[in-house]
Image 1 (cartoon, one colour):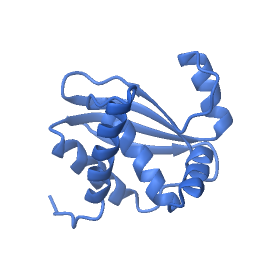
Image 2 (image 1 turned 135 degrees about the horizontal axis):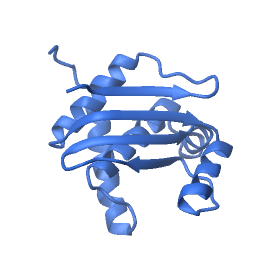
Image 3 (image 1 turned 45 degrees about the vertical axis):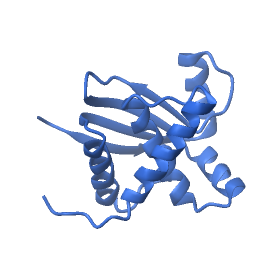
Image 4 (image 1 turned 90 degrees about the horizontal axis):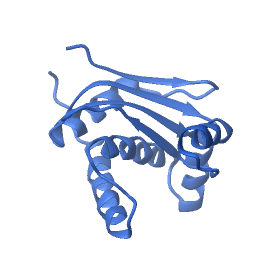
Amino acid sequence: MNRTIDFESNFDFHIIEKSNYIQWIENVIHHLGYNYTEINYHFCSDEELLKINQEYLAHDTFTDIITFDHSFGKTIQTDIYISIDRVTENAANLKLLFEDELKRVMIHGILHCCGFSDKTAAEKQIMRKKEDECMKMFHVEQKEK
């Protein structure tokens, strides 16, 4: 089965050490009992993500992430759009490193594909706990396959 995790950007933003991110995302997916075929991360500006939010979700607000989940069963297939502007501002407001906030948002999209929601206060609390658990996995020494 062909599997890909891709990162693309329409402006001067690039994931550094892509292989570390790919391995982390794969480990999280496996840990949650899922597989994947295709995961596309699209890094964009506030304006680009607002346009997507308006066009596809009929929401007229800025957001940090929109996940288009095309998964089937326990196999993830998704397009995840992330506003680098929102991630930058959120990191500053929360006094976090940009990289940590970016990882949180990136894994947030994966968690949505694994059935986690954040519509209610209780769901948000569960989502945050799971994000924290997944964030810790980034620092775990990776085993070679």
